[in-house]
Length: 74
Image (tube, rainbow, N blue to C red):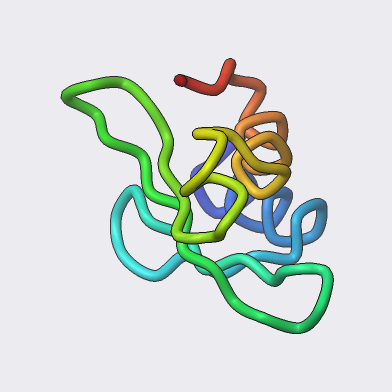
């Protein structure tokens, strides 16, 4: 699978937008946009939604990491 095919697969499955390397804009359930970021040094995801702010996990991270076939970091 080429990089472009992988990007297309993620875009079709997740309906997100790659902003910059290791950072994606994702659509929330109520029309808001959130940013999910992969920290490669700490090997974990973060999100700027309230769910992540309070619980350190959210559906945006779960769906994105599942689309890559990776486990989410906590």
